[in-house]
Amino acid sequence: DQQVKQNSPSLSVQEGRISILNCDYTNSMFDYFLWYKKYPAEGPTFLISISSIKDKNEDGRFTVFLNKSAKHLSLHIVPSQPGDSAVYFCAATSGGGSEKLVFGKGTKLTVNP
Amino acid sequence: DTAVSQTPKYLVTQMGNDKSIKCEQNLGHDTMYWYKQDSKKFLKIMFSYNNKELIINETVPNRFSPKSPDKAHLNLHINSLELGDSAVYFCASSRRTGGTANEKLFFGSGTQLSVL
Image (cartoon, rainbow over all chains, first blue to last red; front, side, top):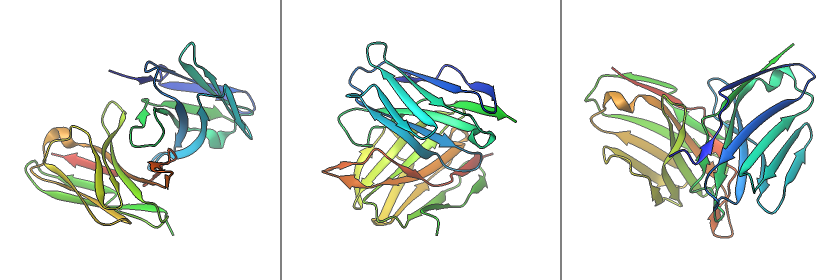
């Protein structure tokens, strides 16, 4: 039972363009969402998060949008850079805390120079 | 000065063997975790420890036994290894805020376990 779904296993974009990574969730109790970025042979690193009381959170080139009614969130990267090439994991939790973080399968982003 | 370090990075072993993976964090965090990333690429929590105390044990076979000698270390011992144990195992840590573990996890670089 996949509570967090990233339906696109991969995405390829040109340098300078926008990258949009999508994530859907099924558990309406989720109230905090995170994106992690993972390079090969490294562990995931925290990128950006959003609480369910917001619909948008921005940090530099990275913006996360949350649509609670659609149970959907997306990560926008503008402008995309070759160094952004990595696997991006969406994660969600409910009731605060990371003991029950549920991760998606990840989307591999390739940014072409 | 790696924040969360785990060893070994690669582990190749025969079925039936017993092996351990070590993890140490120097971030001063109270909570540590073991995650498993299987062949389908899902990252799933296995165990969570807070101040050496087990908080979460997610339906993991009892062949897996975590050990936390202090809050900076969380080791994973696996008995009688099976083919299905082949995966990447990630250690992680987080700070505790207001009684709950902070959602922002810091991960180690992973241990690729291959059981032959």
